Amino acid sequence: MRRALARIGHEIVERDRDLSRLAIVGIRARGDALAARLCETIRANEGVEIPLGAIDITLYRDDLTRVGYAPVVRESAIPFSVDDRVLVLVDDVLFTGRTIRAAMDALVDYGRPRAIRLAVLVDRGHRELPIRADFVGKNVPTAIDDDVRVHLVEVDGRDEVELVKAEVPV
Amino acid sequence: MNPQWSRRHVLDTDDWSRAEIETVLDQSRAMVEVLSRPIRRAPALRGRTVILFFAEASTRTRVSFELAAKALSADVTNITATGSSLEKGESLYDTARTLEALGGDVLVMRHASSGAPYFVARRTSAAVINAGDGTHAHPSQGLLDAFTLREALGDLEGKRIAIVGDILHSRVARSDIHTLVPLGARITLSGPPTLVPAAWRCGQPPSGVTYEPDVDRALDGADAAIVLRLQRERQQAGLLPSLREYSRVWGIDVGRMGRMRAGAPVMHPGPMNEGVEIDAAVAHGSRSLIEKQVTNGVAVRMALLYLLAAGSAALLEDRA
Image (tube, rainbow over the protein chains, first blue to last red):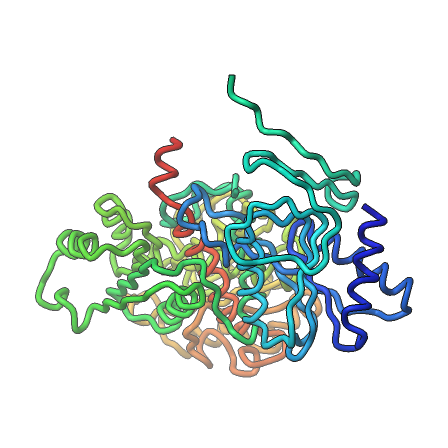
């Protein structure tokens, strides 16, 4: 995981040489921890402090009428103007793409970024929307009913990516 | 999912747990952030309809709910007493049936009769929010006062809040008590004996609440004061000698503010009678949170609308 993040950090810097316009935004609840680590990586390598934000996409979900309870909304924090910035959106797992769609809708409510790029730790396939990641830690082939769980020290007390295979019906 | 929340209506906070109150306050924090964005609108309640049914005068509460519903992208319909069929003598029962047929998802209602929202809630499938019923309750005001106090003072555990003025007619006082006491605050009520419920004056105030007939002593060392509006429209003759006397004995001025803990804030649910229960210099001074209450009110009402209307009630019933 550490190596994957280090590589993504390098790729982000190579893609956008002008670091003064860059900002990193993590999607709660695990993308924000990964985003903080990416910032740290870039600071260590380049000596540049990249603005860091966190966004909660609950209010933008497209399945709010399909869930039983109102899911918990956490506070977003974008402590900089997004106008004309290149934003790197960070999440742990890219699956259907619906979370990313919601996150992009949320981000444009803050202004008009110059570009939004996407970095994910794991891409597990099965997209339902035309979305792809710019920076991928690892591609993991999965069946649609499998479960990919990312555990992070900041949230879960340990770093681990776990692939839970769906039970095959007998 | 939100394990602390399974309510269908918000009628009163008197039977809420501390966890439920804290859920609303925590969600309100997230909503404050939404309101600080350049585009103050999130799509969570797209396609949902919120009906604002105000059978009693109101500006800030109605506008606050309207802004809250719009900030979550709900459709909003207003029904007021004047200009509606209520003027033609339609009964509350028939109004409730009509509103039901119109198909609102949330019904926010204010009514001069205590208990009216309960009556309507039993006869509609919409989620009902009590926006003030007679002298009974005003839960969203209690929650926004708690939110505002928590932002100003931090944890309310052990904090002492003075509530001053016309307690008898005040649904705000009742809702403040039912929201602040579960959060650990202690309440000191103070007001003219004629404007305090007899049972609370003579030894049986609710738990966490004391009555202090001397307003100066009620304020001594308090962490915050909530000044209530003297409800002139609800005064029967004989409860007060005169407005001037009320202002002199119970009005909060800069001198009385000095009795509280240094820097302790003052709040007022509005609309204010400046120069009667509160001096203009206090109302607009640096320790006044009155405008903050108005801003926070929108966020707290967004949280309530979100908790009631996001997610599917049908699915909830399936699960039950």
